[in-house]
Length: 278
Image (cartoon, rainbow, N blue to C red):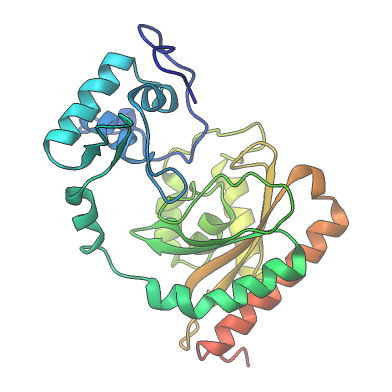
């Protein structure tokens, strides 16, 4: 994070964070609003406070632009400044929005023992995601004592079709909905990101057939993941579980071991929810 004054007058390097919809992809999008939302998107359970300089650095905005965005959000009570530290935290206006969205606490509480068991079995970080308005959203994470730098947190959107969660939710959609997702522009997030619609369609077919999805540094460089779908009593996919590991620990044997473990855990949770594999 940048020290005070280090970003004044200069454009900081673009942040490495979960991408959202680009303002430039929609002719009707308001660029200033997109910039303001990029500021709000920095706040999560792992990053509860930011200074102006840190916000400028992480968003890639000029410091003055970041300052104006923050002051605007502060004026509407979306952000509040700590007068002692000069750091900003989420204000009551933003907190109120949480009560508008569906609550997932009961599901998270139900799934938590299964996630903890999976993390203990694999020794790797585990993520639970639900789909909110066609976007995979992280709702719970389990870390282990092994060295690992997590790139997501509860409440964060987890990429798009580059992530195992996005692939899982897309794979089990009706044909028209899946085609619509594949028709959207897909950003090249890393050298390994698959953006060709035909290649992605074939991969989604495999995910639907095998009940398992892989991410080999497609979402984030240096991170890999294996995921599996969770079903309810009707057989509908309601969640996705993944094991996330640094690429240095992701050899063929680890890939297979984590894949079998996450698929087994997803089946156990699905059975608990009332699903019968038949």
